[in-house]
Amino acid sequence: MPKYLLIMRGTDESNAAMMADIDELMATTRLFIEDAVKAGVLLAAEGLDDPGQGVVVDFSGETPVVTDGPYGETKELFGGFFMLDVASKQEAVEWAKRVPAAPGSKIEIRRVPGDDEVPQTNE
Image (tube, rainbow, N blue to C red):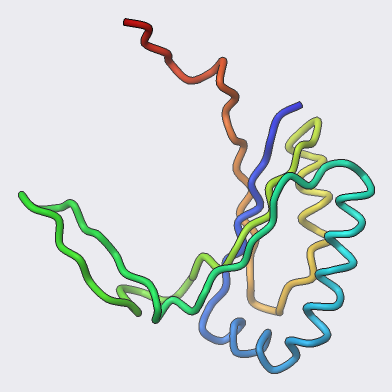
């Protein structure tokens, strides 16, 4: 079956709303994860630390430049992910609709290509 990555995206405002009710959100997220495990579709799930703790390595110039976070626009921050092994994009969408998320946040769904779809070089 194909794999799909559900990318959790939030804004400064939705992240603040999430933190205001973090205990309830964590409890409902645990239930979502339990359901996905029982259904046999959850491959991985992780949240990310505050963007202010991250860095960006920019390859725009001749040498890489490292910038401490927070950085750039914070209109949509990548906050974590769920990796699902489901039969179709539509099934991934249905699971995404069940994710407990703060108002104003979004989930981007991307298919993960299989090994047989990535060009291989055997030298």
